Amino acid sequence: MQQITKNVFTETEIRGCNPSIVFTSEGAVFIDTAQWITNLLEMRNFALERGPIKYLINTESHIDHIFGNHWFAGESLVIGHENLKKSFWKIPPAFNQTTYDYSVDVIKRQDPEGLKYMPAEKDYIVNPPQIEFSDRMTLKVGDHTFELYYAPGHSDANIIVHVPEERVAFVGDTIFKDCQIWFHSMDPDALMKTLDFLATLDVDYIVPGHGPVCDKSAIYENKKFIYDWFSAVADGIAKGWTKEECVERINFADRCPVDIGQADAMDYIQTHNVMVAYDYVMGKLGK
Picture (cartoon, helix red, strand yellow):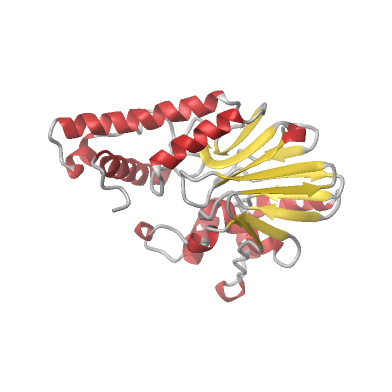
């Protein structure tokens, strides 16, 4: 794990999201959970050596952020946005697997030592949030403040967790640093508003959903990458290309890699990013 501040630790070197821990005077608060079981259990043990785990906050409902919720069931209260329940423990139909089978496949291929800890499907506890909020929530744990903000864009359940005492914000997939951005569930207008809001927070550190810890310059890097996608698709439409032709001819795979352990998703990302951008430019997104 990487230590960001005296009380904040994160893990950016594994497949999936960047699970993090904030240590307070009353116990630990987890932000998201690892998709590798061995790493997840190491993080849990690291936290428990210092005291109880008080809360788990999910920044979104995509599987790589909530996979490990099972291991906190009955121990820590889970917090998330009220929209999480609509898509919790689901993966896109294009993957052609149940969420459980998809998760087992990931563990078999990338964390085989963790397979022995994976419960049978009937014993797996999804463990969605017990505490929900709609727009904003303030959580006090010991001497730390957790400001939770609804931050839609990447999906309709994303949140930002700002810990002012540590000058850090955990932003989930609102930010991708030095890796491909996934558009598959994006609302572009909402995301741009969320990025503008993120720029107003007084922080030194941003823990993105994927990629290394960064500062606020990543906000503008993400904006540029998104604008480049939409500009390329708009240029294609202006040339008379159909959606299928745009998918065939527009590709940013050489721009940067997919985050760790997800190289096999590159074609999916390129295809669906173009499709989302095309529908948005044509005024058809969400219709």
